[in-house]
Image (cartoon, rainbow, N blue to C red; front, top):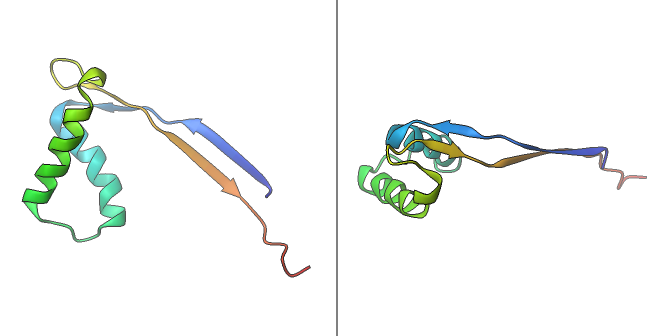
Length: 78
Protein backbone atom coordinates (compact mmCIF):
# COMPACT_ATOMS: atom_id res chain seq x y z
CA UNK A 1 0.00 0.00 0.00
CA UNK A 2 1.26 3.48 -0.80
CA UNK A 3 -0.84 5.44 1.67
CA UNK A 4 -4.23 5.76 3.35
CA UNK A 5 -5.98 8.95 4.33
CA UNK A 6 -8.84 9.13 6.83
CA UNK A 7 -10.77 12.33 7.33
CA UNK A 8 -14.07 13.57 8.76
CA UNK A 9 -16.70 14.83 6.34
CA UNK A 10 -19.55 16.46 8.29
CA UNK A 11 -22.58 17.40 6.18
CA UNK A 12 -25.22 19.88 7.34
CA UNK A 13 -28.75 18.50 7.11
CA UNK A 14 -31.54 21.00 6.55
CA UNK A 15 -34.71 19.31 7.73
CA UNK A 16 -36.22 16.15 6.31
CA UNK A 17 -35.33 17.16 2.75
CA UNK A 18 -31.64 17.46 3.64
CA UNK A 19 -31.63 14.02 5.24
CA UNK A 20 -33.46 12.48 2.31
CA UNK A 21 -31.10 14.09 -0.21
CA UNK A 22 -28.06 12.82 1.71
CA UNK A 23 -29.44 9.27 1.93
CA UNK A 24 -30.47 9.18 -1.73
CA UNK A 25 -26.95 10.25 -2.70
CA UNK A 26 -25.58 7.07 -1.14
CA UNK A 27 -28.35 4.64 -2.00
CA UNK A 28 -28.58 5.66 -5.66
CA UNK A 29 -24.97 4.60 -6.11
CA UNK A 30 -25.74 1.08 -4.90
CA UNK A 31 -29.33 0.75 -6.11
CA UNK A 32 -29.60 2.66 -9.39
CA UNK A 33 -33.13 3.02 -10.64
CA UNK A 34 -34.68 2.29 -7.24
CA UNK A 35 -37.74 4.50 -7.50
CA UNK A 36 -40.37 2.80 -5.35
CA UNK A 37 -41.75 5.65 -3.22
CA UNK A 38 -43.00 3.30 -0.49
CA UNK A 39 -39.56 1.76 -0.02
CA UNK A 40 -37.91 5.19 -0.03
CA UNK A 41 -40.32 6.36 2.65
CA UNK A 42 -39.53 3.27 4.73
CA UNK A 43 -35.79 3.94 4.45
CA UNK A 44 -36.13 7.63 5.38
CA UNK A 45 -38.46 6.85 8.31
CA UNK A 46 -36.12 4.15 9.59
CA UNK A 47 -33.13 6.48 9.52
CA UNK A 48 -35.09 9.33 11.15
CA UNK A 49 -36.06 7.05 14.06
CA UNK A 50 -32.39 6.40 14.77
CA UNK A 51 -31.25 10.03 14.50
CA UNK A 52 -33.32 12.14 16.92
CA UNK A 53 -30.38 12.83 19.26
CA UNK A 54 -28.39 14.19 16.28
CA UNK A 55 -31.17 16.44 14.99
CA UNK A 56 -32.71 19.50 16.59
CA UNK A 57 -36.47 20.07 16.91
CA UNK A 58 -36.64 21.46 13.35
CA UNK A 59 -34.93 18.36 11.93
CA UNK A 60 -31.66 20.18 11.27
CA UNK A 61 -28.33 18.72 12.22
CA UNK A 62 -25.06 17.31 11.01
CA UNK A 63 -24.46 13.94 9.37
CA UNK A 64 -21.01 12.99 10.56
CA UNK A 65 -19.20 10.34 8.63
CA UNK A 66 -15.66 9.51 7.64
CA UNK A 67 -13.99 8.93 4.33
CA UNK A 68 -10.99 6.73 3.78
CA UNK A 69 -8.94 7.06 0.62
CA UNK A 70 -6.41 4.39 -0.13
CA UNK A 71 -3.75 4.23 -2.83
CA UNK A 72 -2.34 0.76 -3.27
CA UNK A 73 -0.09 -0.98 -5.73
CA UNK A 74 -0.38 -4.62 -6.65
CA UNK A 75 3.11 -6.14 -6.44
CA UNK A 76 1.96 -9.73 -6.88
CA UNK A 77 3.70 -10.08 -10.27
CA UNK A 78 7.15 -9.59 -8.70
